[in-house]
Image (cartoon, rainbow, N blue to C red; front, side, top):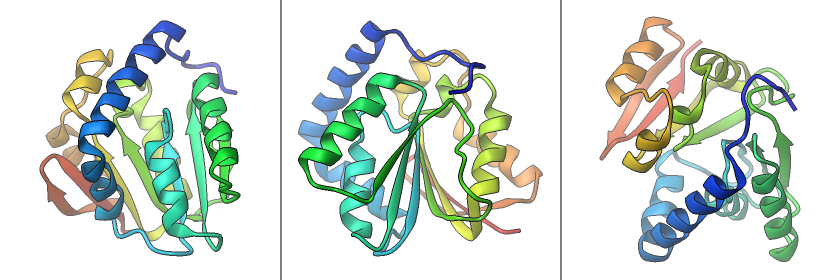
Length: 190
């Protein structure tokens, strides 16, 4: 694991998990819509960057089926263990975990979709993360980005949707292809 950034404390992780589970219980349909909005399909290779407890990971795994792969990356060993346990319980053999703060270890241009949901406000070096996402995405691959108020309020260095759009557009590597209620979908253009 990289050592630039430290995982959140165990107690903070548990509080986040409670909040996310409450949200999932009452808004599960919304989570599925968020996973689907990016255009996920059978056989896709997905990177769930900052996977947390794995809500996106599990749904994506079921949608890409055995022909696809879902890489669940998180800095928290607790999150990675949760994903491994869930995958085993649900018999999902297409999930691979990555314990890291940024480096994926994946090949250049090997990923169809990256989920970056409620993660970027917690990241200290956003530029490194966005560069790694760019590196692993295929040309035409999509980046699904959401940052809810809870993650923005707890993150040390928040970034607004407008700031992210400007940052990604300035490098001419991504174009915004869809925006729906704070959910941004970017496509890698070169």
